[in-house]
Length: 338
Image (cartoon, rainbow, N blue to C red; front, side, top):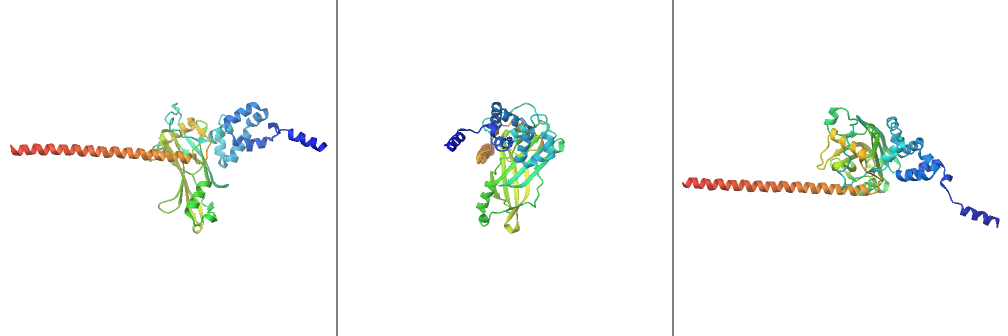
């Protein structure tokens, strides 16, 4: 009888937020819910509010989510953010989201040009870190602003990636495996605005062999204001007699609707505007690939329309020249007859 009473008492007891250790809240709860929900929960629980207001908790969350944030350059930049690591996490955990309807309706408030942009980059295959680097792009000189914008991240080509045994003889299968299991976080930090944004699609939008040497070309991409594509290319080089890959290149560039690479001045301006006022949204598997495909369809339609206009202009020119030639010949005939 006593044991039944005890078990009945235990079954009636409910776990409350105060029963959960702060470390569990920090590492297993905060990282899985969006910032507005965190803020709402913080208002309803003193313990939750206490955990949420500690910068060291958010420092730990950031460091466990992105290894590159442990770098002194990143830590120094984040120390100046008004909300510290919490505001950085709220900026960077969701990715910039493309919305065709309000794409040109971004904030027009003038933004002070940054003297430098910091890239915190983490490339993963499943649970393996292939690259975790920090890069500083100088945006203060006219030379860099006038030249083509490009961010090259130094890579350690000693880090190899073995092809799964069941994929060795099937190109489509290991391409699919890479697309499924490779993730990239590229956080662009603007120390001037004290803001940051994740400008990677998280998962590849395409994986294919390079047309020249057959090395693997992996593309991550998002679309931001003015229909500009932030394109990140990851190159994997064959190694170990075709049984593994090594990371050989990691590069970011901005392209317009005509696939032209943008120069530094315009690139920095567009990136700063996106960091400052771009919409954020939690990444959903496959969503960025669909958005990118819609963007490619838009580019194709645009190219077809331009080609159609060119053809019409050629036809008009041909008709004009033909009519002019006929008039000249007719006049010439009358002149000869006279």
